[in-house]
Amino acid sequence: MLTIVSLWIPFTIIASLGQVARNAMQRSLTGPLGTWGATNIRFLFGFPFSIVFFVVIILATGDKVPWPSAEFWPWLLLGALSQIFATGLMLAAMNDRSFVVTTAYLKTEAIQTAIFGFVFLGDHLTVLKVAAILIATIGVVVTALRPGTTRNIASVRPTVLGLVAAAAFALSAVGFRGAIIAVPDVSFVTAASYALVWALFAQTSILTIYLLTRAPKVLSDILGLWKPSMLAGFMGAVASQFWFLAFALTAAANVRTLALVEVLFAQAVAYYSFKQPLSARELSGIALIVVGVAMLVAV
Image (cartoon, rainbow, N blue to C red):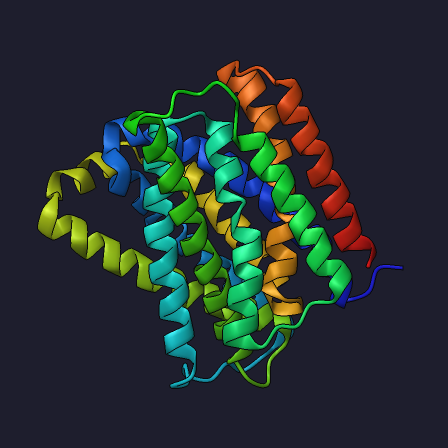
């Protein structure tokens, strides 16, 4: 039977689907806009949609939301800044490497999220959940590491970018969960949406100011590509809304481990959109991911 607490499972799956779609859209915009221009579209065009979501939720719940507390801001800024950094690294890695392989490296964030969540938030996981995270993470590594790849600077760079991006995404997940928990006396839906609005506001402000001072032409290029950017921003806002809802209900490590199903979705995108074939090694890695995710949901 589906309970309120267990809603984090469908929330995470929906968010993963939205994120794969958004990543694919952002990847196609990296060429004309550059890494940071493509990064900014998820925030700049996602922010208005987050406000719409928040207004609808407030009208539906009648919650009265206080001004952000002193405890709220450090968590929010940790999440917001880490996510900007991680997104930029992710897009840079995708420029250098397969879409699926980059996604696989990014998913090593699950085990890092478990560590950061325990250290910073005191999120405790059972032995079986830790085992599930490890199995799924091994599956990601098996999927990503292909034998016979030339070990030169060109191949090492996207690997390092992907792994560092994963660490930054792990910190952002912990930061956002900390911000959501710091919103008092409202429903989990309102707390999640409230944190999302402020997160996108901070991210949009920071990155837009950066582009205005360093690359003003990029902003005009973004506006010139407003149609695909709007769609990517909408998909990003939808994905973020469901990520935040999931973070409000359970430990960030649970959410980010279940999010490994994104590798499966990315395989489908790569096959149909980028014509990237599926190897036997990737199939074995996917099998481990499925086992780990199934264990996580079952325990």
